[in-house]
Length: 136
Image (cartoon, rainbow, N blue to C red; front, side):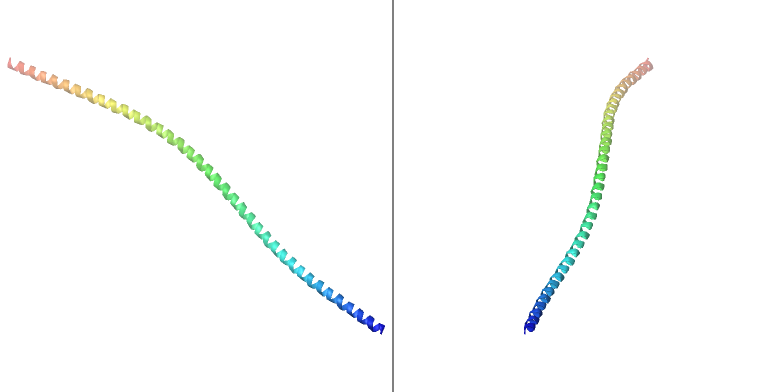
């Protein structure tokens, strides 16, 4: 009988060990599944990080290009401002010369009118002198 009890105890101990091993295998399977899920998530995050890094590099290039373009535009505007200033100075000079020419033309026109008036008086005197000579 002792043998039978020993066999039952040994059988019960084997069943308990088998149940513990089965539970450990189930827990290991769950841990493996969690590990696989974590690895898949890590791979997805690594892919996302790489994509974000590429996007950042593209944005940095775009910002650099935009800054260079803005600097070129600023230099172009500064050059244009200089050209506009020079053209305004030339325009002011031309306007002052035009005003001088207008003054000179007005003075010439006055002088011409004075001379025409003197010429008309001289003609009138000449005509009168000729008339006097004819009547003599």
